[in-house]
Amino acid sequence: MALEEKDVAKIAHLARLQVTDAELSAVASRLSTILNLIEQLQAAPTDGIEPMAHPMDAVQRLRPDAVTESNQRDAYQKIAPAVEDGLYLVPKVIE
Image 1 (cartoon, one colour):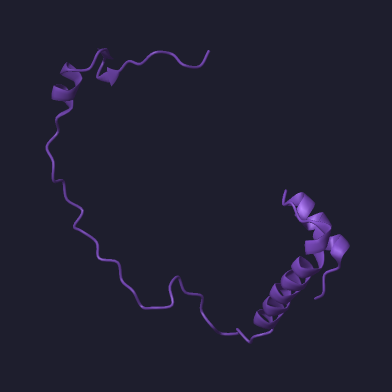
Image 2 (image 1 turned 90 degrees about the vertical axis):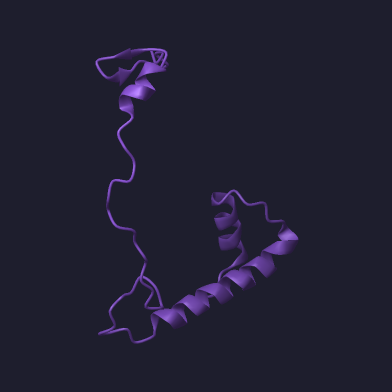
């Protein structure tokens, strides 16, 4: 798919990119190359191929889901500037 310079100028404007008139033909050529590569990839037969999250069969090591710290809520609320009914009070920031 070949892009024309006017198409590249419009894309650059929409993307808020500054492309000079001297650069338009080079940018159009590079974008056309990228779009041609995408067309080639889309032409590849992918019927029956299951999508995967990672090309390697990587398994994430997970830690056991266990409580490792004790509840220190009361100790933290004792040193808080303002607490009410177990909740921290903060200044109102939105009116």
